View 1 (spheres, one colour):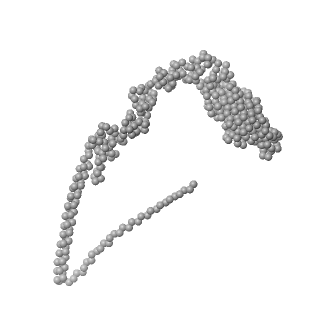
View 2 (cartoon, rainbow, N blue to C red):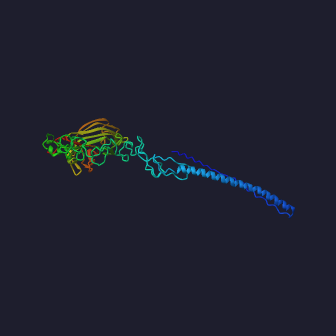
View 3 (cartoon, rainbow, N blue to C red):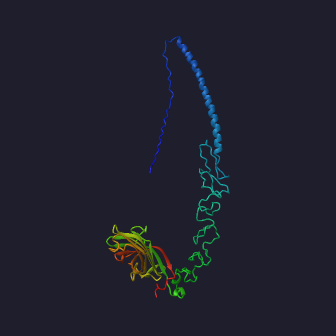
Length: 430
């Protein structure tokens, strides 16, 4: 980055020229005689003429000062200082630069058509800015001051929705009640659990399979005691499906050379894999997932990475691993945030793709044969137990050996959570 700096200096010199003062010269006295008489007469005559100038100055000063002061002061003071009771308008514009006193309007009574005092700020009767019809909006609520019932409160204006039971006229309509029935279900807003939904109010029959608390008792569908005999609740239960992203999971290959393959972006880099996710089903405990049966209903992991020893063998793994079943590809139980699988495996599990090996060591030391090997395996993959966060939003699994010298540690972060009111009977308790 380049910075430019500009500095300007200005010097101003002022030279004041003062006129030289001249001092008169004094003559030396002479021998008394005729010359002395002559000097005396001449000086006297000259002095008498000079006195006439003094008279002229005195006359001129006296006339000019008297006329100017009398005319100017009388006119200006009389016109300016008499504005002591302005009753015609809230605007006092009188101001004379020649008057040394500041105009003060001590009794300003604005015209009846004015909504505020428009007097100049110097007046003691000024009460604030003026309302200009169609223009001024003091509270910035979109309604100008001439139409707003309270232009000092931005939460009060015509057309604003009325807030239930707040003792404020939000819509500037005194006829609108503070307790109203917004959804027309007969239940006033201060007692209705949802005054925007006419199908939800106290005393309304519970619909047992619509995922809505119809009767406002905080119990939904089959959790509501009134649904005990309903066919929708006879053979089922509610459960929670939580989807987890597997970013942060890790594969460890412990062979002649050790490799750590992390599930992170970019997924196709040398030491990374992914994307991956899984879906777990939890028991519903009073409207939230909790302890009880635990199943894995879906699992997916993409693998695209290269391992090997330079000059010996390079193996490119390109596999898609999948497993899914409504009743669970892994089953277990959640107890105090610990998820234990029994059996500890994902089944049926499929791996489809290719393994490509290049180098003279292919086919030895655990490396696949040279060339491309097509993979289409169906079987079971071991899985470690999970430890969950308090809100079940994350988990960390224990490391397990999923193949010879190949270990997997799964970690997950929640991306979605949904209540399943159509839980299959295979999950629900007898």
